[in-house]
Image (tube, helix red, strand yellow):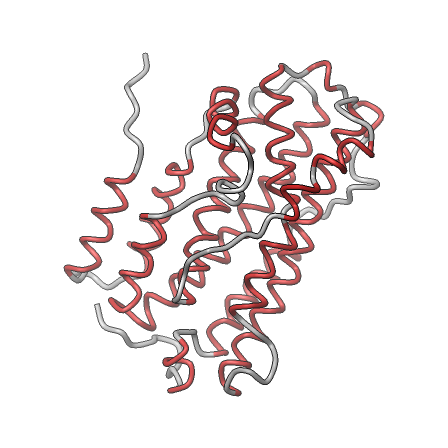
Length: 297
């Protein structure tokens, strides 16, 4: 696998910063907005009949799952601060890198807006369904919301690889939770969220594909580091996170390693055949990280 771009020549400044040429990231952003324009629009205020929301139709585990995913979706300021920090749109970076970051920013602000809609929809569901009043729900979000979220990454591609796994894992969980809940309003919320996450995943997959084609084996180890140390947002800051995560997994089957199958497909589509030894080792490693489950009848 060679480290040459099929779409453009990587500038020296971009190569040193480890980012794609501006035209490559702009192409991925353009693809995303084209898909978003064709997606079904929805509004928290008018898109759902909140008067019909009824948490009494949920099990205790399903209620807990709603509270959990609300915390995750609501932790947006800290999460998106990472992209401002690592992809600055100011004079601290060379012009070519600024051009890349500015193109990415078009997506980032749309992504943040859509994720914020998810947080608002889940909060509105809790309030409308009787899970809690507005004040109590808001107060539950303060402590985890103020916690600093960090990703220990040095290479730009790692932020896209991380988001690819997270978006796909979240999409899968929303689909599986939707399949077991008996409240049609919550089912509609989860349907809309999972559709958005699927589009976010597609963008991250597009960008990761471009990285693999532009930089080849040079990004293999950074991607491996993401897989090796992957943790969902807030896993290190929410008290009792792992007990809670196991509880919601019992409510609707959830395992973030389910997303690894999709990561493998992205890599296979991106790289040349025959693959390099380093890419083969990466694929073998990702496969080994997938959770082995007992067969069911």
